[in-house]
Length: 384
Image 1 (spheres, rainbow, N blue to C red):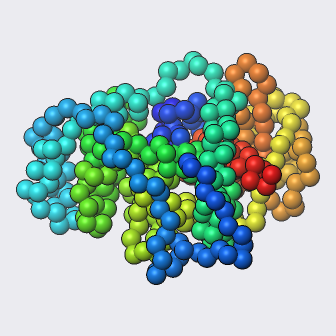
Image 2 (cartoon, rainbow, N blue to C red; image 1 turned 90 degrees about the horizontal axis):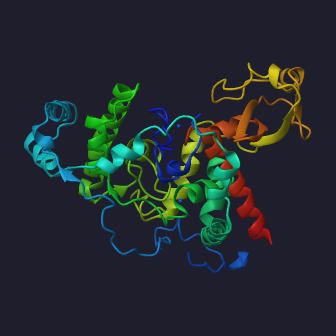
Image 3 (cartoon, rainbow, N blue to C red; image 1 turned 135 degrees about the vertical axis):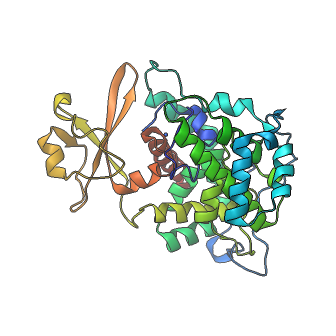
């Protein structure tokens, strides 16, 4: 993803993407491409005269849930929203009323977004096994080989290592295989006006109304039918599972063809993931995590769950009985990450702000660590 809830401003990317379905932690799934020798490589993704490599054409899939007629155009809250869109963004009222009359109520989205039942212990190793496994690793090697030049260009431009970009796209959609078949307009409309009864219902409805507005604006700006947008049950779109608002804020035309297309251009996805991470604090050349041992669990209460940022010095951590598994670089600050393993001992890591930049994509320690582990696994497999 879970559902794996992310805070409103973080939902921007893969807010409740397909990877969220497998998450057990709130803190919020190819053909082999032949590589070429370095001397023969040309960066087709950047050339305006050469078409960028695109994903292989897919058969048009039926929506994951056709939904049911809900007569949205007659809902008072929907009509209030329409009036706001007319006043704020210059939409035609009659056109929006006709649009919402065609929107469908997606009960599947309601069921999937409900919080997971409490009481089930979190298990990092079980979560990790869903993402760091042979098929995904092999697909990651293929993806890296096929898009090596675009990945290298993104790393040079944004400072985000190729392996991290590969890890995120692999965890999110298995390199474009699982991008979702829900009509985004149906899903976000349903969640915007009938979010499940939870403690944060009002905030979540406000968030999804913002995403509904972004969906309509993005469709208008891109001159596409809003009903043509397919994505996750919460409206995340394309290879990197960006929410509509994040497409408008962070997506880039990295293949240079004059348009942003995260559904069909893996090169745009590569550049957009890198741009998102840079904007959210990724620092070029800095590491992500270091293994650690907690010698006295009673001393770390003030170090756990202290926000998604690296705020402690190495000396502060050592004073609390946290022993790094390797020498730490001077001058960095860290956060203590606990990865619970059910009844087995908890894994602990010291995380830098680059780790926490990944959590801006999905507010889950499990998610960020699975991205890092998949990235390492793909890099190792590719080097063999």
